[in-house]
Amino acid sequence: MKQRIFDAGKGKDVLIVELGGTVGDIEGLPFLETIRQIKHELGSERVLNIHVTLVPFIKAAGELKTKPTQHSVQELRRIGITPHMIIARCEKPLPKDVRRKIAMSCDVDMDSVIECMDAPTIYQVPLNFLKDGIMQPLIKRFRLAETEPNMEEWDILVKRIIAPRDEITIAFVGKYLDLKESYKSLTEALIHAGAALDTRINLHWVDSEDIEERGVAETIGEVDGVLVAGGFGQRGVEGKIEAIRHARENRIPYLGICLGMQLSLIEYARNVLGLEKANSVEFDADTPDPLIYLIDEFIDQSGQKQVRTHTSPLGGTMRLGAYPCEIKEGTKLFEAYGGKKIIYERHRHRYEANPAYRQKLEDAGMIVSGESNGLIEAVEVKDHPWFLGVQFHPEFTSRLQNPNPSILAFARAAKRNRIEKSE
Image (cartoon, rainbow, N blue to C red):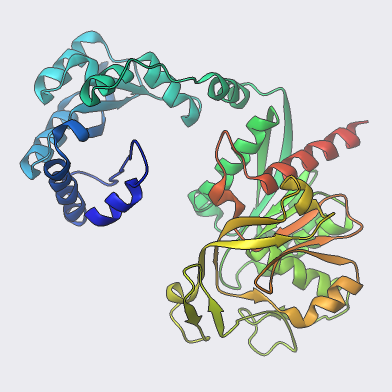
């Protein structure tokens, strides 16, 4: 574990290592011991331990309680780690006497007790930290020159998130809606795109199984764009296919990610090519038209040959990591990425688009706009305002100041669609 941390820090000035979970949990002890040893190996002037802790507000008593913080710090000390800074999660402002109490009981400087109060968006938190003086203890600890981060662009984007000029509505079609955290990376990526466009992206959550039961028009309703997210297994697949058909036939901007791209091929094969039994071997191993299939061998991002079959363990046979994607000129994908011919995006899937059907699909108006070592990576529909399916996961590389191009282009197309509908 230490070596992985050291490798991650090569060529960097600062490395932030996050340890999740609760102090004292047995599964976290090896990681805490790793951090304890790193301080001895690097020296105390090169390591700063920051403890994020809850300071709850007890409504009945009308006060903030520091006991949970004191106990968790005591547990850290028992393990051999002394926090140098306390980040206090709270729903009310920290009064000076509470800060002083935390500083005294946890043996940290007063200026190293940083308030982390609830904020309207998580992206405002760094700005709040700066206002609370987080830089001073960092400068002191690491003996840095006095510095003030330039957060002007960040501040503008945060203001756009909190009070945007425009808004659009996207139908987010998935099947894990009981646990929306499953789509956390994607929902955050949409926030990034919305901030870039000064637009609030309202998500209309659509359970794909509800589409199967109630029909696509009733469940999706009036939206500016349709997004079909990834997933595994057969449950809810037919509903997703109906959502794709709805977006394609009604010329609604569409983005399909991973399974959403694979199902767009199946939908097109069924409803345009007339291959009524077209399917993925993931859902029907005996389908006469396997638009999506399992390739036996592929080369992973480290250059190693991977072999997978239907009986292989699921986790060990996925195509994971960043792979190159060659983009076809003149396509929506080419435009989204600013004319780049090769991009690198991250993957997380087992099944691939079957190249045996490529010519039929292209003859019928589908465009293969991205390829990776012969594998189909992205598809579009020729006579559609904006229709894109990507095998990769664009949300994994999205950041607030650098939203992923394909998600940004989708949001821009949905915004354009809303404007055109209102004219």
